[in-house]
Length: 150
Image (tube, rainbow, N blue to C red; front, side, top):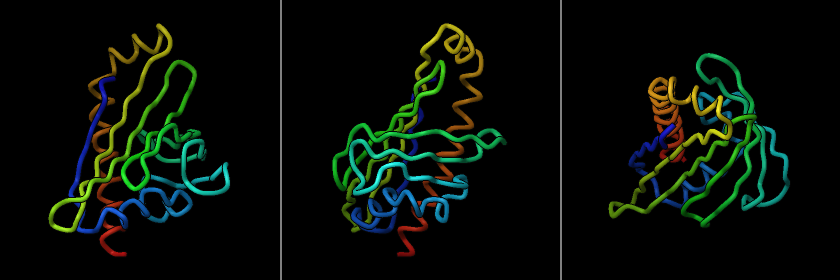
């Protein structure tokens, strides 16, 4: 699947948005699509931070173990999740905007690691992109609302 990118302006400073998007334990109370989060690594959010996230995907509950693979503090982070046949990469980026608010961008991509998932991806790609776009847009709306309330 080609990467999906969604963006949204948030009427809150970048520091506040960063605090919301990196509050893993609080994310089930903020993002409607997330049902549970189990943080697996104690300490500050950074490279190596791992958690299990349970959310509804295409009408079903799914749990993925996420690992932070890159961080630019207060600006962006990248996560990776691996399942048999596919590797998922996600990036969250926060950029200060000139109006005192910020711009929030989420990117998601799935990389097939087997012939079977390559073929399935070619067939189901357009449907998957639409579903991912809708889910990311909903996540952005929830995260923006939380940052704007704080």
